[in-house]
Length: 182
Length: 269
Image 1 (cartoon, rainbow over the protein chains, first blue to last red):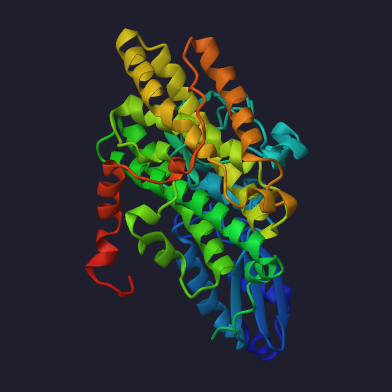
Image 2 (image 1 turned 30 degrees about the horizontal axis):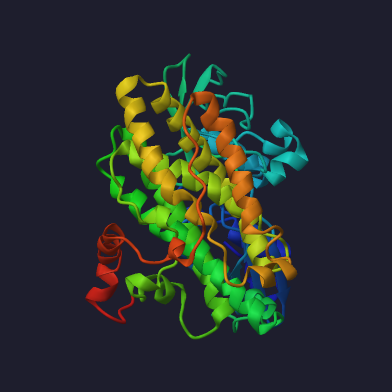
C-alpha cells in the first residue's frame, strides 16, 4: 500500500517502480514485472508518468493485460500515465533480477541460463549464428529447481507459454519448466 | 487516467524518409509481415493433431510467435502508411490477391514432412533476410534484433527435425526427400526482388541486396543438407509471380483466418 504522504508528493522513479513491483506477471504470478526486468525508462514529472514496457516475447498475449494493470495501479500517484511498448532496448532473459530468478526457482521454474555469461557478452547479444542443435546453446545444463541436480535434459524449447521450455531431471525424475533464454 | 499519446517514434522516423523510400519500406514490411502471418496460420493447423504431444505444443507455440511477429510488423507498417488503418485492418481486411507472402507459404499444410520441409526452408531464409536489415529505419532495426532472439529456437526445431527424418529410416527419409523437392521449387520465391530495393539499400534500411541474402541462405542450406545427402533447392529466375497468384490452399486458409473478423464487420473483440 502506498502512503498518504507519497500520494501527495510528486512520485520519483523509485516510488513508481515500487508500485509496479506489486504487479505479478499474468503467466507466471510468482514474479513481478519489475523482477522480470520488463520496465525500461521511467519519466516522472508534474505532467505525468511515462514508462517504457519491454515485452519479454514479441507476441506475448499478456501484454495488454500488463499494460492495463500498470495504468490502473499507477493511478494511486494521481498523475496521468502513459505506457509505451518499446523494443529500443531489447528485453533479454539476462534482465531478470536475482530476486526474480530466486522467485522463479522457488515456484518450480528453472531460471534461464545467463546468456552473457554462458556464450560471451557480444555474441549472446548478437545471436548471429545459425543454430543447428546444441552448437549455439549454453553448454551448462539447466539446474533442476526441485533438487538442484544438473543431470537434466531439455525436452523441448517450447512449453505452455512462449517464454517457457520443458526439461527433465534424471535425479529426482521430475519434469520441470524453465524460463527460455532469449 | 492516461497521458495524451506522444507522437509515435516510428511515424516520426517514417516521416523523415522521402516518398519513394517510404513506399519501398512499406513494401518490405508487408512482405515480411505477410510471410510470418500466413506461415503462422498454416502452422496453427497442427494444433490438436500433431504427431506427438510435444510437437502439438511446439507447433502451437511457434505459430503464436509468428503471429506475434506479424502483428509487430503490421503495427510498424500502420505507422509508416499512416492512412487510418490499424494492424488488424491491414492483416484481415484485404482480398486474397492483395497478400504478398512468398509462394512457399502458399503450400498446403500437407503431412508432417511437408511442414518440416517448409518450416526449415522458411526459417533459414527468414534469418538470411533478418540479417540483411540495416539500421536505416531504427524502429525496424530494433524490432529485428528482438525477433532474431526468438527465431533462433524455430531454427533449432526445424534443423533437429530435418536430421531426425533424414536419419529415421527409409519411410521417413522418403517423405522428407519428396517434401523438400516440392517445397524447394517454391522456396527461392522468398527472395523475390522488391520494386523499391535500390531505395532501401540507399537508405541503409537493407544492408545488402536480397540476392546476397539468397546466397547466404544457400550456403546455410548447403552446410546442413549436403552432409545428410539431401538435395538443395533449384535456382530459379525471379519474377513478380513469386509473391502473387496465390494457391487454392491459401484461399481456403484466408477464408478461415478472416471468418471471425468478417462475421461482424466493425466489431471490437
